[in-house]
Amino acid sequence: MKFTRYQQFVVALLAFLQFTVILDFMILSPLGAILLPELNIATAQFGLLVSVYALSAGAAGLLTAGFADKFDRKRLLLFFYTGFILGTALCGLATSYHGLLAARIVTGIFGGVIGSITLAIAADLFPLEMRGRVMGVVQTAFAASQVLGLPIGLWLANHWGWHAPFFMIAGLGAAVGFIIAWGLRPIDAHLKVKNDRSAWQHLFKTVSKPVYLRGFAATILLATGGFMLMPFGSAYTVNNLGIPLTHLPLIYLVTGICTIITGPLVGRWSDRIGKYPIFFGGTVLGMIMVTIYCHLGLTPLWLVMLVNVLLFIGISGRMIATSALISAVPDLKDRGAFMSVNSALQQFSGGIASALAGLIVVQTPGGRLDHYGLLGGVVVAAMLITLVLMYSVHQIVQAKTKTTPAQVQ
Image (cartoon, rainbow, N blue to C red):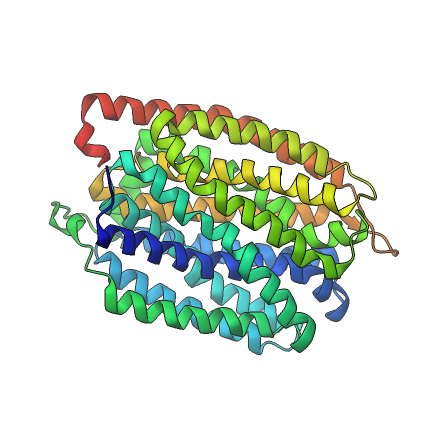
């Protein structure tokens, strides 16, 4: 099945939209080596900076879930994206740790809902047989933020301070917002399906449906790896692996380019051989590389880049396959609510994981991060459990496809 020109435009727009949202979250990781000494904060406080975004995003996702299927998805997207841009600008205007903390809460309230709306739009406009390719392109935003966003953000931070990257993201977001308003057509097919529940009834029915609960359970542990490892990635690379801060942009650049190349390929393979086999392979690769990465000592630059590339290929494969598979679980009339609750649970679990990571990892007076091996063990254990939970989701989708194929379109 080939994409129409409008579908190609939508995929590109969703990918660029995700690029700005993911970059806003990821930018804190490379800025960690700058923010820890400049704001004079401990690792636990930095972990809180990351987790409050996720926790506020999770709360917003739950509060909006009941209303997610009551509005045109384009209008809903524009509303939350505008709030996300304003929150990011507030991060750039912050002058203290507490000011930045408050700004991250505002950004999380709006930005955390955007991912669920994006997934709902992708599921509304593309059949399951195409969603692997769609997610393969959309999820390359994760890699693109490394190739373009993080190096540029680090360069701006090194020359004009840590505020500059947030202003860059807000400016890009404003441009994307105009494109959404101008080029995206209304997305309201779900409004034509009879649904006379109130917002709270709709939310309750969604979170209490047994089939949906299995999907939610799989999501809870899915974000653990990224939220636990990424916040301290730059500080670990500099202080434990012995890589100079000036070389961090090169690591992100190489890793991002490789992931951009493999992302669409993984999406195409997931459409051909199945979403769960790709998820399984990505998880196994991820567990191996997490174990290696978290036990490295002083390491040459080339080896750090190789480990990072393989690790992110595994993570990317998991994200692409999961997004496509999870999108087939809810019915059309529940899709917005399901995606909102699913995103909220992912954010909550990620926020808790990030806070726990800040408690597990301890920075010594010399700057070295201790207990990183223990952190890696926790991540690997979560990945193993998720393998089992995602197989359950795979069985749900297989059953739906065999009995009522139209429900997964």
